[in-house]
Image: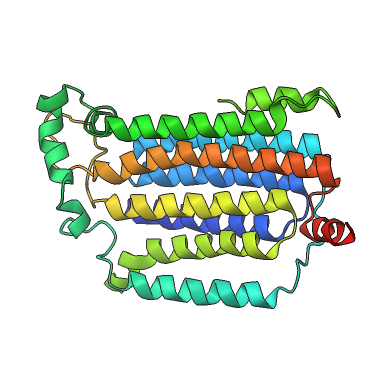
Length: 191
Length: 118
């Protein structure tokens, strides 16, 4: 029961934060609220037993993303959204409502939240849970899958991050024409 | 009622997703667009982890005497996705900085005006 209460409360907080982000015009406030959003989602992940994901989301999602966004506002020196109304709000609203309705229609077939007999629980997951300890000797199943069974996946991830880091450096790393700050941000982005 | 409780998570996550999507397509400020993109992304993470949750399951760390664990596979996929997501965010923000240098603005409408006046 307590699980459900935490779940509902945190989801409510998440929704309030997201609505506030959509409606606000002060960019600094928007970025800070996004940090809060990220931390709340980390709480949500802990509630759903995904401790590793919560850890990463709190460190990388809430930490580094927020810092990068703050750096961008500092560099661009824009503090406010100039046209808060957006351009014609009706078309985007219609698109969003249609997409949302389609997705909700799609969820009607999904097994209920927490269902042990859902197809996603029956495929390779039982193998990982039963065998990962004797196969790899790592008690944390997520680590075992990430670094051992799906090691090449993680290698691919490193390639993606490396490419993004190089692209960021190419975009803003070498330029010190306007100010020295731009070059420093390029080094920060390289993580 | 059971159906409602069983799908409540998914529906709220879809609402969050649509809030992020709306920010991306309707707001003109590029930093705000990227924040919207991140909200969308986090909602997708929440959807995946929701699908992997097992009622009464423990966190997937092998422990004596525990038989029921949550599904570790979505956790692994989302761990990868979070890190890749930060890489794409960094790239997007670098583009915003470059756009500011070249156009002197990060508002979409003003950027379009600059392009037409060329």
